[in-house]
Image (tube, rainbow, N blue to C red):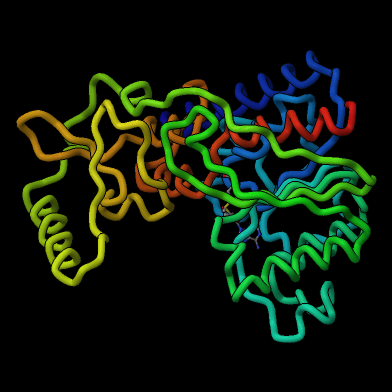
Length: 331
Ligand SMILES: C[S@@+](CC[C@H](N)C(=O)[O-])C[C@H]1O[C@@H](n2cnc3c(N)ncnc32)[C@H](O)[C@@H]1O
């Protein structure tokens, strides 16, 4: 009971803090909306360069909690239920949307044929509002998904809506983050512009820089789980494929990609320990692995936190892209 009141009071304080923060920093350069918002990783990059968020949508209630404690607002739910007219005017549309195949006629019909997919939700909002910039993020495989057709349909649909479309795969490890995470970024401009994607930053990454010094025992793998990992790896090896767990230490330059399923067994990123079984990374380390600052609050269970950071974006890559977009538009 007391705890509940405490949490509610804390949320009101957070909200007031965000509102006073907003009114103090009124030098906004553009308004944006945050779709498929997750925990707001894309938002963070665009706020840094003068963006004001005027609408957000995310239907997962745990992600909504994280969003609220960090940004002081609860995102609207299911985007398929929101009319474009209900969304206030904005300049940039930001969306890290789930990847789905389009039907066979896709390339011929474009927009109309994306109906029933989440990309269609983006297209219909773009058609109504005609924002000046579109910023879409997706898994690297979107480029080869359905033999390249998915990306072609997206490109054609946005071009038919009047946009100049640019896309490129960028990797988090080239932007100062110790994680090998390649993602595709699709950027559309209503104006005719020459857009250049940001160059790689020449920063040496090292996993040790983001690891916590004191880590609770619960993150160390049990003998049973560790034995299971080793057995599966041996089985994969005997079949000639390289799957199984991946293990790193403080000196590793970067880890493999953290995914939303990390909470299951942590197999994609294990950390070596002296005289102990390897351990999983902690939720705070997962946040750092995505370039979130330590001021970012984690107010959900470990399972939800891993899912949320695994689903999110590498914030420094978003910042580099936001900076380049602002520069291109002379904002
Ligand atoms: C890849 S994640 C995006 C993560 C986000 N870029 C971030 O920084 O955390 C996609 C998100 O879309 C949300 N989603 C999927 N379908 C949705 C819908 N119909 N309405 C609102 N959100 C939806 C999922 O819950 C998920 O959090």
